[in-house]
Every structure is written in C-alpha cells, then in structure tokens.
Image 1 (tube, one colour):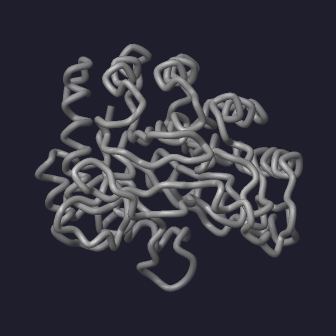
Image 2 (cartoon, rainbow, N blue to C red):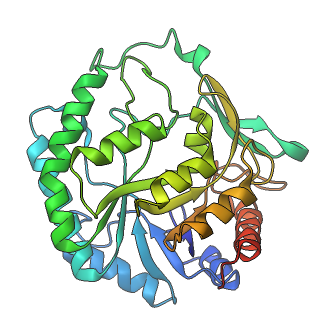
Length: 322
C-alpha cells in the first residue's frame, strides 16, 4: 500500500511539500495544472508537471482530475471532442508511467456539500450535506436528466476510452457519486453504491477498468466497507483508495475525524491487507482544526497530519511494511 497525498490546493512548492516528505509520503496525487500554454493534458505540460514534483523527491502516482467532461456525461454535441481529450491524457500518462487516473461521472456538478463549517469533535469544522435543503432548489439549465441517459452515456464513454487505457497501461479508477443520492437539482446520480460501481465496470470489462474505493461515500450509502473491500479487492479492481469516514445517511451526513465515524477502520485496513491491495491510498476530507482558516475545507494541513498518522499506524498494525 502506497501512502499518497493530494496537492489540489498546494500544487506549487511550499511547506506542505516538505511536511509530506517528513511524514515519509513521497507519492503525489495531483490535478491537471497548467505550467505551459495550451491544454494541461498535453505532453509538454504533463512532463513539466512530473518533473516539478520529481525535483522535490515526489513521484506522481495518481492524476485525480479530468479534462472537460460534462458533454460526455450528458451525451451532448461535443462529447466526442471531450473524449479525445481523455484519450490524449491517457496516452501521455502511459508515456510518463503515471499509473492511475481517478475520474468520476457526476454531471453538472462534482463533489457537493450544503455546508463546509459543521462542528465536529472539539470544535473542529467539517463538511456535510442535508438533502432537505436541496428539495426546493431550482433545476439546472439541463432540466431533468434521467439515470437511464447517464448509464447510456457512461457505456459510450467507456467503449471509447477503455481500449486506450489498455494500450497505455493506465488504470481507470472510477469514483462513486458524492453525495450518493439521486437526483440533485434534477440531475440524476447513478454511482451511488457498490452495486452501481460493479455494474459500471462490468459495462466494458477490462483489467484496466476499476474503482476508486472512496470509503466515505460508500459508507454514506450504507455499504459495509470491509465487505466492499473484499468484493472489489478479490477481483483486483481497487486501483486507488480514499481513506475517510462519515456519520449519517445519504439524506443527511457529515464528515468525521478518521477515528470517529461509522466504519471500523482497523477492520477495513486488515481487509485491504488480506486481499493483497498494494495501490495508492490517501487520507481524504480532513477536519479543519484549531487555528486554521477553513479556506480549503477538507484539505487544511493539521487534519492531514492527523489523518496520515492514523492511516500509517493502522497500516503497520494490519501487517503492511513501509
């Protein structure tokens, strides 16, 4: 298991990069940041990105970001051009030996919360979602988008990109929909459970099509996390892990400290070890702690120090060697 850190809000050299190395974390999860003119998924830009991290002793293991994809998800004119962006990204990742692409199929809006300042243990701040507050929210300009339409569009997309991922030897790690509830503002969400993720990767079967096992999202949906780890781990379909936890239900939930949610996190870690998972994992969506501004909800520094320490301790207790 490779402990990684995300550089979404720290994607240029700063003290956080040094803190990661002091924690012994040298695998980087990065966005598609533009360092050159042109599209960020083009080779010239990506090789500069990779080199920027390498110069600081960090290895880019996961790209957790996507080219424009809303037309793909909605099945609108222009989707084939967006699919070509994905193909270019995958081919360039293959050339640079970047092994994992974390992507999602959430149309119109991505990760979504109704609050990012809910009180948690000791007054720490966390994000949360209350579906009741969204029931009267206006539809988007897309109106009602059905689940059937999204499933058709997902299959079309996978039929185009999976062969390219195979050629490039890049793992496509599909992230579940967060929040795992449908619809929101008229936009259906289809990847709201482990069963839905299984259906998705079965659309176009491939050794290079699997999942990002986001524990928090699937715990919110009501899935048993150790059982999910065993289900996908025994298939070799876990390509990336978001290690986090929650309290509540899809209708109303909030994030928690990693040791304070509904999941038996040690049992989860033992199951990763038992199924032989060796891929990247990161401590996701951390609380904002004392003295921090909450400018970057879920990604302030002190909570990441806590989350990574807890994660590394569980790994060693479960049998992983670093």
